[in-house]
Length: 293
Image (cartoon, rainbow, N blue to C red; front, top):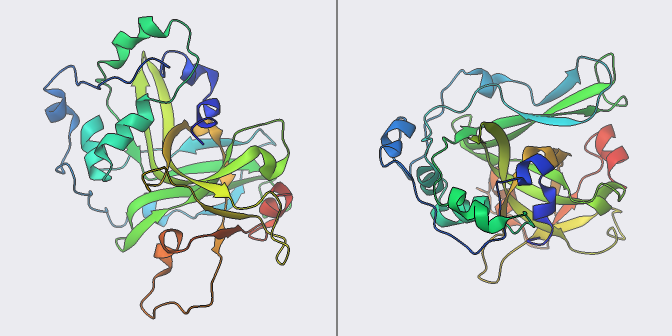
């Protein structure tokens, strides 16, 4: 995964943003940034959910108006409230103070003149805006769609969905556009949506946890592809930051159940952390069935 993720970035993102230079230390240029960039919450604590907001009431999927168009994924119209705008504070809040910075700044890319760019990576004073969702829009005339055949699904990454539990949706991420269906895709779980500006250009991004395919072919009994969580040598989930353009669309995962029974107090929101393997559910809707081959 570490070898393929740099390829997920659009050319505009790669230019001057990531480098193959030696790892560096991220330093906040202006000490006052922590005060000006932070809002109401302290580092390491999750912001409260604002009840009754549009973010909580919007439908997750449905017809999308407009003519047939290319697929796209865009962040929600407004950033989440209550989050710090500071790189290090956000890392503390999501419980990954170092890995968030590492994932953002240390993928290897063959950027020309990388040595000349290293100075820019030593000082990162851009404000980071966290979002709780993004909307994937794509052509799907077989599902209830707009008059142009377009369909929209909301992808959520929320620390306290509806005030009850975390919700981090799973998505298909494109790694090879020349390969059909799942052959050119990997499955990821969105841990954080965010954006920032660098040299006056805005970069919408997602912090991802990865899944890998368990087999090179679908499961013989179900006909479904099987994926499992990917771990690094230290036993931690692998994480990377990708450009939002790399996300193709949402994907529904079904647990691969064993022979044991689930505890009576088990909550479905824990499924992606509790099970060791998952089916890619191509029967979730018409679009999924046509997309996953």
